[in-house]
Amino acid sequence: MTLHFDLGAFANNADRELLNQIPQRVAAYYLALPLAREEGQVTVVTAYPENVAALKVLERLLQAEIVPVASSEIDLQAAIARIYPVSAPLAQSILVWTDEAEWCEAVIMTGRALGRALDQGVHILDCKTPLAEVMAAARQQEFSLLVTHMSDEARLIRLVRLSPTSLLLVRGEYVAIDNLLVALRGYGSDHEALDRVLPLIVHEAADATVLPLARSASSPLNEMLTGDTPIRQHLRAFLHELDQANVDVAVRLRQGEPATQVITELAQGGPYELLVIAAEADGDFVWHVLSRIEREAVWPGHPILIVKPPVNPVESTD
Image 1 (cartoon, helix red, strand yellow):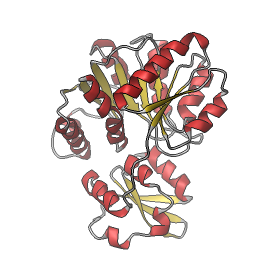
Image 2 (image 1 turned 60 degrees about the vertical axis):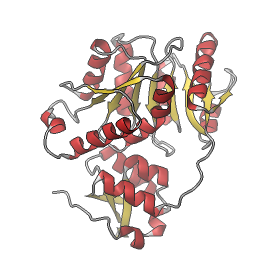
Image 3 (image 1 turned 60 degrees about the horizontal axis):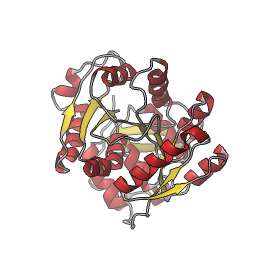
């Protein structure tokens, strides 16, 4: 049984020592706040107590076993806004790099196009820069995105899992984005994904299609469509954010295992010029989707935006 927590009085009695271990960006990404520490355990209030990957990240940051209790997305968003001090946003830039000379032009053109669309600076690294140095540069908070191409599978999987910033994987020449597909994981990270792409959607006057992913192959579709379940509440909040920005949005629902839902929609829906998907930890699920796209030769040549958690990754599962 999942316990539910009332956040009404929490802001005035928050444990500041615990909160200092969870940066505001992490709390917002996972929609989770630490409540109290006792006997090696930390009670965490979260909108998604079933999100095992997120709880593992919080366990690492707090260095304690996590005891999750539930609250709503809306209450947690309000509590995070009240608890953390307001600070001026950092100026953001896009990092551009590939170590494959034949891909330099496509990667640079894509990076510059995104820089114009997102009104961000573009910092281009030499293709001879080692991957370790690229990842060190990407840890700087001024960089919101790494635009890259990497053909070697082993190096690409390392980048996907260990990149400290979000990734735009270039897979062909840049083309204008008229319609993009956002795969919804059903967690707080979906809102971070929307924040990332909304300026691009507005700039390009693009349409958006959202694909709510089932948690498993056996998850019933009616859970997303009826009643007042957390998944339906989440989808309603996400669509409301898009509607507020006057974005034309469509919802697609598909049966089956989550990765298969994405592959089928890319193959049969659209056409789409961009896929957006968020990682919950270090990107194992995202890599599963990417490897199937390549292996099954689905949707060739189009870019993929991987939204990463705002915390330095380690080897773990997603």
